[in-house]
Length: 166
Image (cartoon, one colour):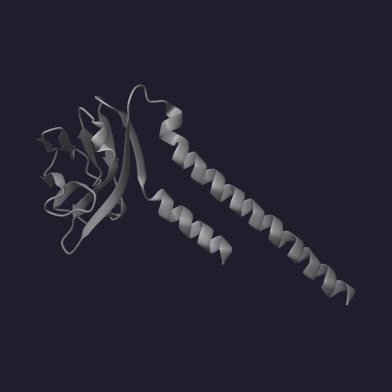
């Protein structure tokens, strides 16, 4: 039960794409998700939103056409790939751009999203800042699994010993 909870927490945490950039710079976000695993399914529109996607929060939207690049202000979408993956770029980053975003596609009966956490920092961006959240999650999950294994092995040996002595 504990193992399943840890695994579930890890899977949920790994669904958010962490992206970092610096003020004045540019980030490029590769948007992929469950929609590109189903190669037979086609999507109609691509979205990039800040926060929860609604008509007011859509920053840029593009219709599905072969090798289309759409631009709107500091945002652009490039869908030059056939596998459903598309690229979103944000230019001239500002500190206020920090926050949760969603990129997604509209299919025939539903809309599928991928969450993105964008962190915009001032000055130079180091690799430690980019990967610190992922590294922390891996350490937490690995430590939890190691403790779980260390707790289960003595119980198994005790049960085996008990069955042979009694």
